[in-house]
Image (tube, one colour):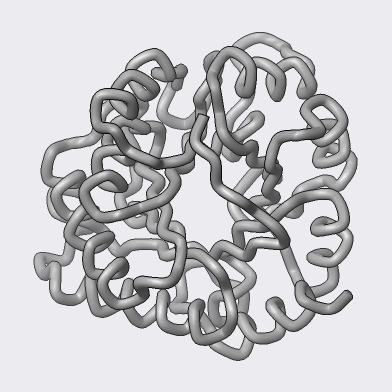
Length: 263
């Protein structure tokens, strides 16, 4: 497993505009880079510790491997973020579940972690059946010699398990059989609040594993969530008017960070 210390860590989402080859691709990587750098700057200047870059604009997503153009574009963006914000932790998530592509981008651009939506088992999502590729992901990491941590979702958004599995068992399987370095608990959909009860259940199942909360975090809930979890991943709240489709709002970032840092 790859060690990465998380202590009240605040990770801000950099939701990318549509990339080359996706249905809503606008035809100019310069605009994609400009928007990504602007959002990242607002997040870092507002006080977040890390950035998580994601091809959010590429919907609809594939259940399997993404196209080479997606990997190339994300590597370009990730490298620019790494250059512009060298002190910030950088992570990569390739939707819906291409962990091997995320790992390749992180290894090439200096990323420290990847997020994997389905690292154990299988789920039914809008992409159909999405299932683990942990076998190849872990072997790729070994072959690349990459010090890149795996943040694995317990359940995940916009999806349901193919068969019923207790949350605690999923958490244990992710850690002990999938060798995940940290676990992520989120709400049922983007921007939906994460139930604190589920965060506590996962914490109880694997008490020594870093734990993050990844949806619906607000200044009103962040303190309670951080009393159980080691960090948060925030995307929707920090956008203008709380609209995930908008740019990052510096005032909202500062408000959330102030609430998170308050003891």
